Length: 382
Image 1 (cartoon, rainbow, N blue to C red):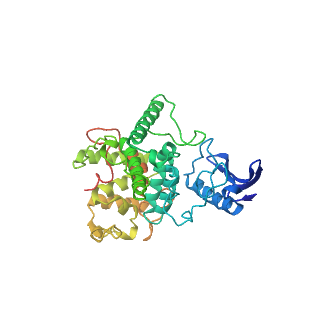
Image 2: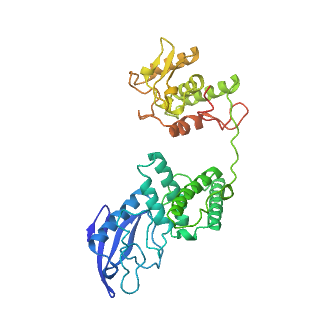
Image 3: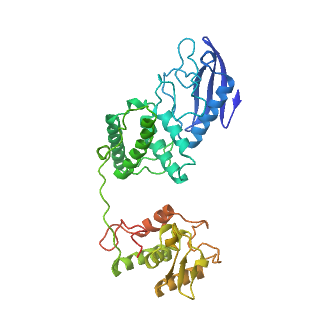
């Protein structure tokens, strides 16, 4: 038996001949997957190659167990024949298109989507790949995993959408009943929040992208995930404008109260909110800001790291912001020229998600006329 990263190839002698299987850990459980017989084209080298592929899917979180009762596969990826195995697929040499099989075998959504995602790495931004992996792993693959591409039609997409709506309702009802559902194999992970219409629509966008490539490769005639009728109607967010003294003062006071609360480790929410309000920085500009970018004696802030050349600019500091930043620097444990102005509690650089979850959401109270809960870092910019 050959082991590889918590997995191993098992060689067995069945009544119908010598064959191979895989034993490995996935989803917190021991898994056993039969590959096939030597007469179907399997040998030790091919089994070890399959083990590496499976373990890669397990590490990426996109491995789906095969359906119960499904026949072992031939070494070319098709179902094994009951008698002598079919001829090997010459296109299956590792250089073909995603999900490419013989004309008689239609890839399942899991097979095609896994190859599609693997080829996305290096072609798009890493955060885009992570987002697409999340949509596949947590939503699309559990629903469509073993479905052949040709079986995914408009009715199937609409059924998926209804399933997501029902799932969101169950999560909401569980929270209201005081028994929230939690993620993880043992149900001890983070609380599962209700899915918003926008979130469901984003997963359908990923489904549409996968099926668009399947259509280009000739696996399907049309893309059933296109069009607004396949999506949920998402309410447009109410515009938020902090252009009056009252809501601005309320927001600053809320941030200062949290900074003074001994139950919270963060002590710079007030300075962050003031900088967003009075300097008009974008989220990434604030997160990357260093003390060398701030000239307190000259009352200027230099934006040197921006997405565009036009974004590099010098901002005159208002007296109130100058005073806030001076006080923030005096109590900062690290205020050297190359130190971050607003690091996390562990000293690392924030990102927009941390800014939203750790700073804005705790600071902004429940919806009122003075402090709308829909405020974001964009609405705080002057």
